[in-house]
Length: 103
Image 1 (cartoon, rainbow, N blue to C red):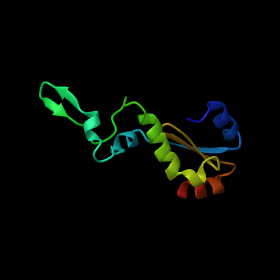
Image 2 (tube, rainbow, N blue to C red):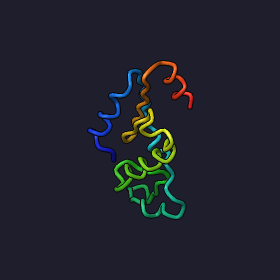
Image 3 (tube, rainbow, N blue to C red):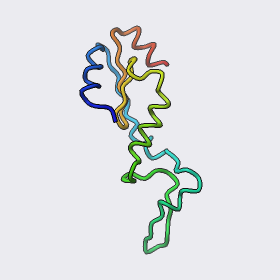
Image 4 (cartoon, helix red, strand yellow):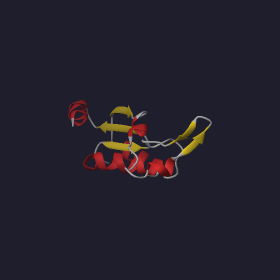
C-alpha cells in the first residue's frame, strides 16, 4: 500500500481532479480456479465456497491493489493515484485532464 504522505505530495501537482470509486470491483476478482475450497464455510443450509474474493479474506486488499496497479501501471504517478478502491486522476489543466481521462 502506498504511503499517504507520498500520495499527498504527488497531488500538489494537479489543479483539475476526477475521482473514481471502484466500490464493487473488489467483489469481481475471481478466486484462482481450484482454490475455491480454501474459502469454504458451513451454514445450517450446507457448505458453500466463494467463487470471487470475499471481503475480510486475509491478503485480499493487497491482491486487489496489485491487480489495479497492474492495469494502470503506465499511468501511476503520471496523473493517476490509487488507494485501495479509489482512483484519483489529476492534471495541471483541463485539456490534459480530458486527454488523461479518455486514456
